Image (cartoon, rainbow, N blue to C red; front, side, top):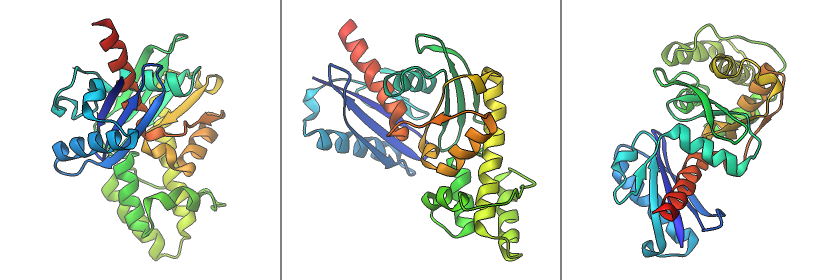
Length: 263
């Protein structure tokens, strides 16, 4: 029997399937779009197809993310914080601080010795420093968002942006490029700004983070420039799991297995 977790975010809808031994069997990441019901159905269907199983072979579904209450047939809805902590405990045991940067919010989670949530801080009031921010900046630089990380690693200077507001930052980026500033320098400045904002969030839950084991999840964790800037700001290594996008969905699937067994 398999168990499914569905994480309905602002940019993507992620689904993960685990078996009774907690092994990750299949996963998928699809754009959420304007109709999240369609994204949920697609993510569910793709995960099942990749596992080569029918819906009837899934014992339970747990939903998480801002759209979790829209997942039909769920056993339960569980907060993102709990699901991310559970998922990272499986993927990167020993994590003491988890930094998750998603499409519209950022989270810093302090975990105790057992991998449970001890404290957390969340920025969900502004898109600055999130996936949406990076999407807007990539458009301003006229590059793909997946190119930003590699581009920024070519920078040699210490350019600083004057604003992290998405609207003002976009205008500033356009002006810098028009003035002949190398796109790599601008990308690196963007990533340093994101890291600085994220470090302030981390400091609220783990002022001693430089001495702790830090892991990053979320789609932005695929951006090597952001990871490098965060590690430099911390003065410590930042680990990234193989599939950082699906940590929340994985955690939800693991919780589904546990709750099904407890029934």
